[in-house]
Image (cartoon, rainbow, N blue to C red; front, side, top):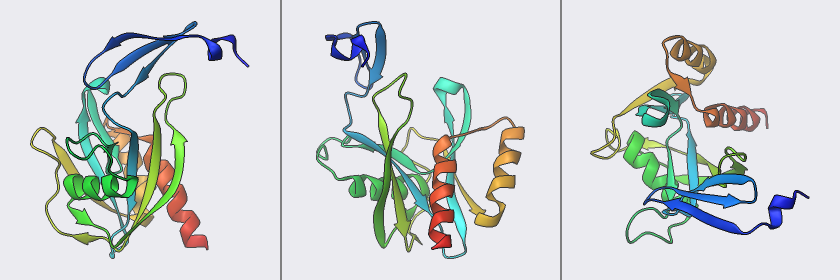
Length: 181
C-alpha cells in the first residue's frame, strides 16, 4: 500500500465544478457538483450508433463522444439515479428516448488525475423524440453512424483533427459482446 493512501486529504482549491485535493504527494481532482458520471450506448433501429460531436475547451477541439453527462448535477435532481441521468442526457444531447436502460459497467476514467468513475448505460429501443443538440450553452452535433462503419468513420474523424473519447471504444466493446451472445 502506498504511504499516500493514509495521508490527510486537504482541499487546495474549489470552484462550482472542480475541487483540487492533496493527499501526501498526490494532487487530484474531484467534481463537487455531481455524484457520478454516465455515458449511453444507444443504437437505432436502423443499426446506427448514436454519437455526439462537441467542442471541448480543455482539449481546444471537437471530440466524438457517446451521449454522456453527470448524475445529480441539476438543481432539484441531486438524488437522480444513473438511469434517470442517462435518460436525461440521451434526450438533451441526442434527442432520443429509450424503452429500457441497463447498467453495463462502472470504470475509473483517469485514476492518476481524478477519482471520477463513469457508468456505461445500454439504451434499448431508442426512439427519436427531438432534435437534441444539448442545452443552450452546448454546441452538440448528433451523429448517426452505421455500426459496421464506426471504426472507419472514427478514423476519418481523427484524420480531420477531431479527438475520440475512449468511452466510444468501450461502448463498441459492449455492443459487439451483446451481438455475440
